[in-house]
Image 1: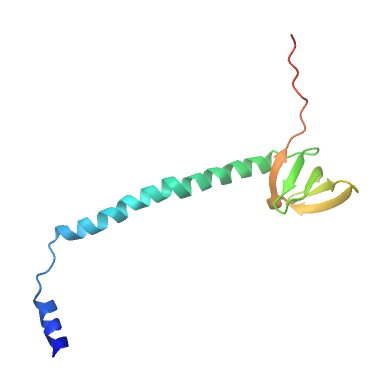
Image 2: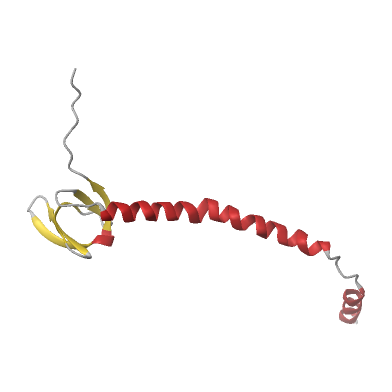
Length: 113
């Protein structure tokens, strides 16, 4: 009997007003731009910087792979690079996508007085 009374009470309850739907939808609509600004945009920026770093690598640059291997670039192919790893001068062929960071070999700038 209690279940029937609950059903009758629920069926007889007044329907929510039309303005109530917008009130529930507003937080979701505000959350989407916030999610974009805090998560998606910074990730796209990092991805763009990483792609630019990979396009600018050249022989002689020091690289660190995602696995932590450090070496000097000997040659660059289409989708992989050959690096020389110290101390035994091992030559390793790794995928370009495995490169985590690049340190270019530039002349140290000396200020003249």
